[in-house]
Amino acid sequence: MLIGKSLRVTQILPCRTPILSSSRTKSTVSKAESVFKDTSSATFLAAAGNVDSIPSLNGLPEVVVTGRANAGKSTLFNAVLGRKTLLHTSSKAGRTRELNFYRVGAEPGKLVLVDAPGYGARGKREWGQLFDDYLETRKQLKRVYIVFNAKHGLNEIDSHMLQHLSTFLIARDGTQPFTLQSVITKVDLVPGDQLAKTIAGMKKEIFAAAPLCLPPILTSCEMKPLFGVDKVQKNIAQACGLA
Ligand SMILES: Nc1nc2c(ncn2[C@@H]2O[C@H](COP(=O)(O)OP(=O)(O)O)[C@@H](O)[C@H]2O)c(=O)[nH]1
Ligand SMILES: [Mg+2]
Image (cartoon, rainbow, N blue to C red):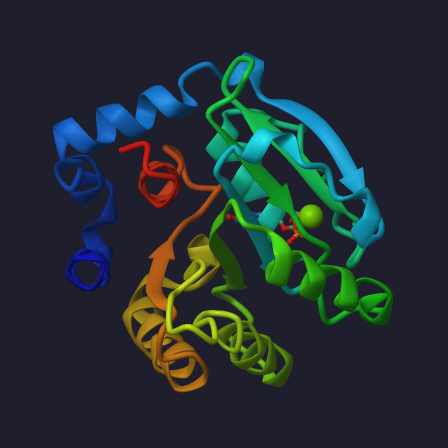
């Protein structure tokens, strides 16, 4: 189902604005919207710099965001939460060194969103183990979002990260503890006549590195209206069993 939707978006991108509205399905979007509707109640809960300080948070369903430093993760997920500056954004690469936990919805909360440190910058060694420990032990983790910059495409580190994340996707007993969803953001930075080719190439690379990764959601936080943010909201709500 996700594959079908993703393909549809890619195919119609040259006329993306009108399609955005027509691609929304009323019932599911409205449920997802209700999850993110109360933007003022989104709250920073805790930061964890080591595995012992990862908070329990009563088992609320959780999603985590990763990607290369500067890919646009914090900007995108601030938009998802309807906030401008809740998640730290920076033009300086690799500023976040900890896992940062944010509650979505008024207390007791509907879900938790976790901002992970950007990789591919100095500092990876310090947090790499923390992230792996988190992925391995976090029972309430529903989906990992890996964000790519449309302008930069995938590099070797991205492919390694996809391969690495894939090793967590199937447990020894054959169950899937969480799913992996790709997102390509900053699509506004790719000229319209190159977009379809760029996205098709990135999709191929994502699939080659991580066949189980869900096909990319395309987003831009610079386009007016925001592009694809509603799809990310819906996707998170579905991953958390809330839509
Ligand atoms: N053109 C464009 N710039 C963006 C977009 N999203 C983020 N940026 C810029 O990219 C830079 C890095 O963003 P940030 O969210 O801090 O990246 P992070 O390190 O992955 O969290 C900032 O200067 C943002 O303003 C987008 O959709 N389009
Ligand atoms: Mg960030």
